[in-house]
Image (cartoon, rainbow, N blue to C red; front, side):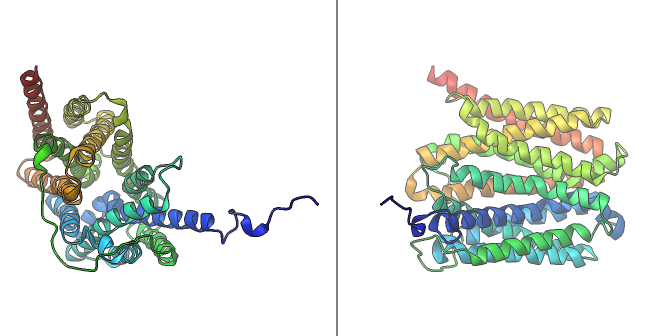
Length: 408
């Protein structure tokens, strides 16, 4: 009698463990993506908000910075929450906050409401980052062709890149430019919420909830490399923050281009190249990645300053791409040092400290640029900021050169 395949052995059925794992992976990745997309969606809309609500460029930078500071507080307060109560409830909370943020943006009619929406966005990003990354690691076997870290990277940076571009396209093409993007974001976030709510819990061990701020920790065993990586990546994040906050202002007032899609495209390029840079770090020989990142940051700062000086879009686009690549390399170098040479017992605290530094650098310089714009104007403020970024990158590069001479 010929052998027959038992239909109950098939792993491609909708109710098979493999299919359920695949659906859960897609749900978590999508929730991660849309939550991060919601955090950058306002970028393309800031000029419209400014015109409708009558606020100045410094207000735009404050609105943006509130988000980054919310991420820092969220990381320090709830960075380990998914280890304590499980991945699923934290993912549900993060996507629910994303839905709430879109809803608040949808009804916003003044600056205080925008600030509330940005704080909610910051907390959603802080919650989803650790929980989604951990869940993807547990859902995707390490031996598979696609690594969990790669999926998490593209969900994270892909969301940051796509949010501003999608909002810009909708603002240009759809009616009610300050409402339609948020209706779409709210709908997508609601889909993400349903997806993670229907997924199973992936954490095996849960320690129980304890509200305690994550202590900042600079690992003593790799202190110098940690600080250099954080300074370089922080310089790149500062540029990302300023691009996110004032690109629309530059395009509208200096280049006289009112396209919200174009504003979104500049920020899309910056974040997409940041993801690419984190993958390219494998191409560098040991000891050269951070040097290359610093040189890239200097070049990016020069290109952005050139864009300000000659009122040109091309150097701004190229500068955004170069800055993204350099930032991605610096981030990957820093995290690689923590995970391979840092004390495993304090790895979580070290990673939280690293990202707390980066998100602080995302926020504070943006406010500084807003103050400079108010005191002078956009062009000199952009030039001074570019010089500061280049100086910080050159300081790290000089420190690396001194260490190399000492070693020889």
